Length: 260
Image 1 (tube, rainbow, N blue to C red):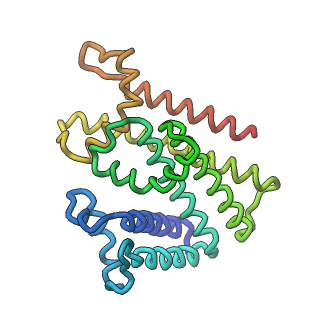
Image 2 (cartoon, one colour; image 1 turned 60 degrees about the vertical axis):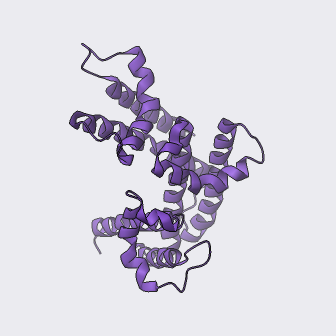
């Protein structure tokens, strides 16, 4: 099969795997939430045929069964099930780190249903980190370190199965994990761009997605806006400066990793 077709199908499978994973953390009442119900709509065609036989008191195992089946299909597409697992673990690692970074950026995350849900997803990791410290910043840093350690170990195990270990496997796994965190820089760049574009159309401030974009952008753009106010009171260049700053930070980070 053509490599581009495999990549495209794999992206679609990865998307469904992630939202199926998210569904496992949703409560029954959130099926009727204006935003989170979209997760149910997207995954019901895959989960509903399994019926209620896999439902337990606290968790519905049906999404987990579908995830396993999709990973098997993706493994067949790539010719390696361990490689498909490695891709899934890496996406999950990035998702968890991203949620923790977003939660660290502002304290009002609880007012948004999407970030409140994200808090629920990462709470088990943060609870483990809280055994070592009660300071919020320290807990978040320790949570990222714990996720990094877990990802390095899993990468080493799966990498040995795939046969893609570097000459120095531990160093290679650590650099690979840090590189995945660094790649999240592009997420924030895209969020700033999208938030700046939709601001031209007077979006509904009560929309959860609009709120989320604004809350993620604020810690990056607001400090710049205080130093460089809108030119002529109208032209706000702070998003451009923030994007340039993030792009420079990404380039420096990549240069450091390449030299290690």
